[in-house]
Image (tube, rainbow, N blue to C red):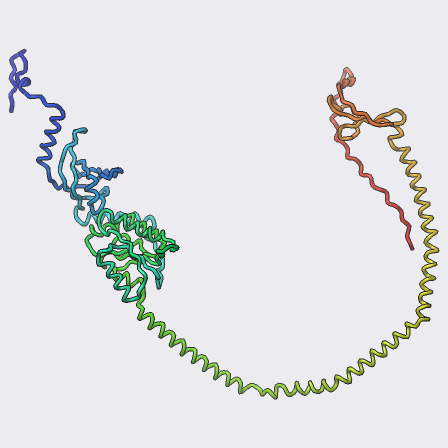
Length: 495
């Protein structure tokens, strides 16, 4: 412990002997001290506040019930992680402690992340399963039927593993089929993205080019630990499998392994080999089944024909002979054939007699008598019609002259000849009151010898009594022109 010496009012000797450091020097000294003491540590805690910026780095806090450590995982390390951490996951982080001078704090630089036991990873997996199930990605009504005989099968797996060999070998044994392989990584950081891209790529094929569109997809991988199979638990893979229009069989791991893609797929196979067995039937069994069905069909047809032959023979014994069926009808035909000539001769004789009777009335003397009678009747009609028509025409002329004189006496033209005039508006309607016309209106004045057009320039105010003013009259609505009907001509009756 250092004792500070002071001599009353003199300077502080201890302060003068203590060396001075800059802020950067102190920060670097602390950095070397911390990194030297904690160059390799394993820290257990819960991830909180995880951030994933576009740079590819990961920033999060590692906490427990007592403290919090800021942590950073650089992009190069992030690529090597088997799975990406999530908030709330308890992990064991390996790395080193360093300081961050700009904010005067310390942080943990992460070199690896592993779950704090399988229980923590399973808890995160269960939480993700519940989330995706709540969105309906695992519903049974989304499942599609697996085609019975797919012509093309698309396989999403590693091209170098034993899985593709097992699938091809099993398909060749059971039912040789055209197989399309989409090579992907099945483990590691990029595995999930490649598997999802392969599923979407197969669905994007239209089958019009050189590459046919698969009728069935198989997503397969061999067995491994939970961390090894984690790519098939990622959301991007599960969503791609659920949205696939092509029926999909998942065959990830062994029979006891379960991943989230198994819930989203249309059918789960316990192993990749079992997926090939579920995809196609056995060709030998199929041929045997078809042969057996053909044999049974032939036997059924033979039995059916024998039964119908027996029924036909039984029915034929109960039917009468052909001679019995046609004998009576042949007899009736012979009788009618014998009666037909006599009936024809009798009918001809009857029509000949009718023709003779009718021809007797067509002699020339009879025709001349009838023609004379019709001529006399026509002369009589003409004698009666001419006087009647003359009388009717004279009566009609007399009535027409009377109506013309009446029209001349009642029409307004006779009034115009005495010095009067008719004032009409622009629609050729007569104006009956001065209240209707307004300044600026165009009017037509009709005299006995023609019309003249004028314009209203002003109005003289009507005289009003001192006791009561007369209210201006409203402009009456123009009356519709009466329809003139053409008098019907009285035409006499011809008869």
